Length: 201
Image (cartoon, rainbow, N blue to C red; front, side, top):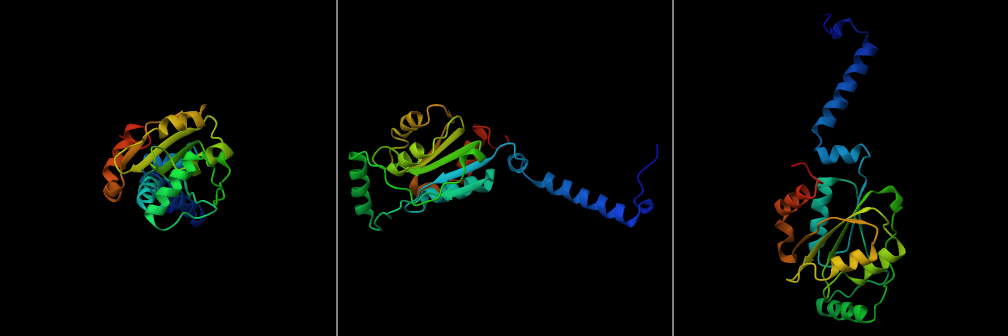
């Protein structure tokens, strides 16, 4: 059997071979989840809303682990900076069953297979901004993955609301954590992603 000898190749062939080897080496350095996303086999979008930054911290870590695109939801009319004012406004929106106008351009959802939805628990469920989002941009039969920050009420009734708003979607087990712990939740998030099959065991 003849062994490979790079010195017998032409300079052009050798450079082509070297480039191929470097590409394969870089691909092998990716985590399996990242390689899967890079190959286009599971196109991921992370949609999140964060007032204080707690939910954003989770979204950024999830993005670092599974890749894909990340979009921060914002209302067309910004919420007040004062916490108590935001709480009052959120309650009034919920009592009125309001649909706040989105201030974020939503990408073409046909490009994605898996959509993460990240939100704080406001008065027992998602901010009403997500009701606007999911009614104006149906997720159909996509895989939907919720994650939530809260002050003690966990998901509240948001999972039931998601099932109602996304009746055809494949809803995976979500991740919830107190907002004050979100900055140091990396290990917990990784364990959750492994448990739902989005990171290798």
